Image 1 (cartoon, rainbow, N blue to C red):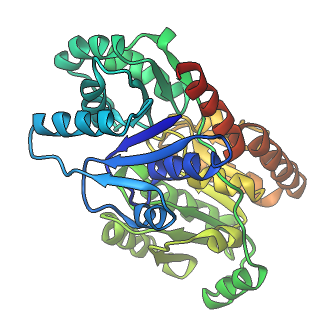
Image 2 (cartoon, rainbow, N blue to C red; image 1 turned 180 degrees about the vertical axis):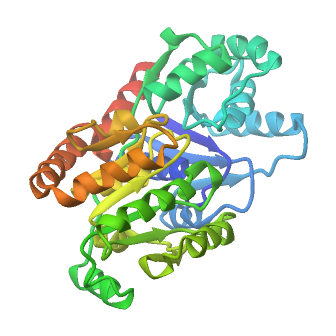
Length: 366
């Protein structure tokens, strides 16, 4: 079976990690997988996969609606005898399904997330049902994402199958974690809260910082570790300084492989205004980190409230602070959540589970 993934690029991100895990996790399934990128540059994960022998083609699309890309992609599909075209995200789907029309190639469309605030357009509400007719299977990474496709994209609920993202368990190095704590002056912290995410308005780290400032009143020796970079860098630093809590918050900047930083965190935080299925949230769960998350997108599907963590009202710093304090001050709750997090990750969000579910879709369509 020949499966080709159509995506924007293979830089470091959630969608790209799913593609990487599908390729690396199905090596024994007699599937020949390749990648077709419609944007450049390829990105580090793409370069890594190419070096391992995965066929990757990059055809950078032109501004506007690039009809020549459809023609080139169609020719590639036919020449390489592709059985299944797995399109990731909306724009790659549009190009992919049009390119595969009237060929033997089956099309799968996976929606990985939504913008915030979500919206629709009259063009899409007309076109999408027609595209769905020549699409063999639609999948989404959460029930919330599925509902968004129904509400905003006018796609039929009966055609959409939820397949949650899956990851391989993080591997951490005890000595490296100890060095991180020592180097960042975290060794004497009463509790280390932390997050790994791009510094973007949609991640709402402003609310997280506001909540943490409330936590410090009860736990003055607590620390907050923020791993990531982005457009909110300066604004977040200004907020920290205005609150007078600069000594309690550490910004690391971008870390290519943050596993050991997640290992240094006691309680993982995700304050997003919108979220599909956060990969770093799954990584924290695989390490048994209890989590505090906002009730946004798929967060409440990943974290079971009062079982593996706390799910609180979106953009509510007081509720977020209360949940942080509850986890930090109740050891028996922390331990219960920690054990339950690993169990839930193994059953629902491991790479093996995701690969088996997607392999079934491939087999059904082939």
